[in-house]
Length: 222
Image (cartoon, rainbow, N blue to C red; front, side):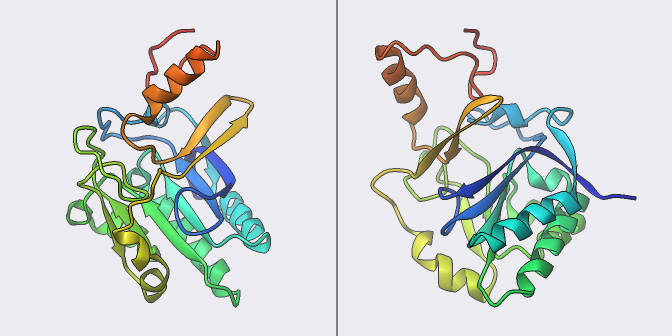
């Protein structure tokens, strides 16, 4: 039986969710439903597409050949699909083990490490970095790759210590963000600082651009 992962989108290169240039995979489905989340389009577990892990692994292999520094898996909540996540991270680890380059695997989860069950812990055993914790809109932080003060960057391997230790307490002048476009529309990649999205909407409106439905306001109409 083919192992699959329900996915919202895949993009490369991602330069705003981890070290260097990366392949980004966003899983579909999130039961945590944090208020203020900018990615509410990833909440519905029935949306997105069921993708064979072999296909995702092939995209990772292609990204590695293209010079990627790592793989970032976000969501949604990746740990609601522990079997598929485990298969993907195992395949990604095997691929990186066949190269002479240092390639890291980073997973975003809204769960605290203490909340993980055995299957979820096993799923992330190859992850070098976990960024954990609920997004809390009322507790903003300037720390890179984290949206609120309760989120933590856990460095689990020697590679993670070497590569990410400088970022654990790093507060950039502005949050790194990318803009991407596909057949579904324009979307943002990164962890925006508090107030960024309303400011973006206002700035676009002053230039005559009115947004249609957005992932942070799914009920809004054009």
